[in-house]
Image (tube, rainbow, N blue to C red; front, top):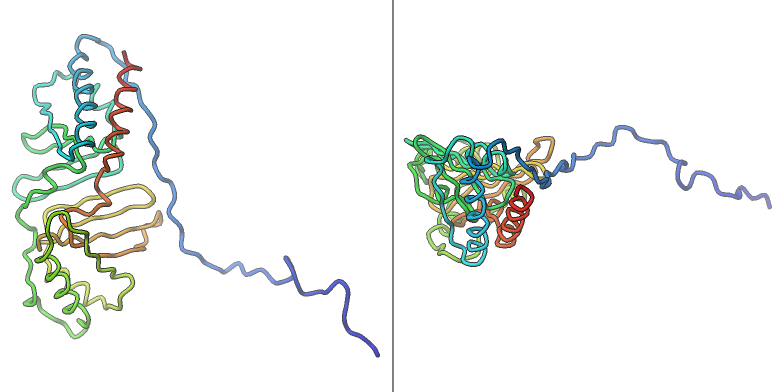
Length: 275
């Protein structure tokens, strides 16, 4: 008998199959920012004294916020220019920024110390220590009112009305301390018309939060109390997760108690190095 079996076998194993250079994969998030301590240059030690004293107060406030969950605010309007410069340089800019619209817009920027925020606006200049700036929790006039079920429906609005009922029911029943209720649009069938109708039905709130880490996370308040839109983008700015959350503040933007404790320790390390 003639055998066609060859040793070693051919057509198997690495390199035996033609390479396909056209395979495409979604770009995974990359480029997370990490903490790198920065020591500012001090040209006038006496003028910098108020800034160093305030940094020490921020460390104490961070420990206190980690233990109690209560935030504190420190006004900067009377701080001398040299002290203000040193403070700004030391705090730097972290991963989370907040914009509050309305009649008197306010912007808040997290420093490189998680849970330590610089809040600025017309006649406003202060530092807040806490999980999130207090202004982000205030109810401001919405940028577009919620139309509810009265929002005009196009022919391509299919599943949105049922989702709205679910969101409104949970928003009305939500109480402080309750777990968030999440509607994951990425996993649910929907049309572009559904998304546009939900935007009109829920309205547009005054608070927008951007968190930069692995890619970006955009958190937008709706005009419906306790309903937020939370969207995650990869480093190529492609939307990879789209959700609504029913809660008072989405957890993704909150500095945890462990973060605040760490910030207190790092603030003291910077102070020690400067001195």
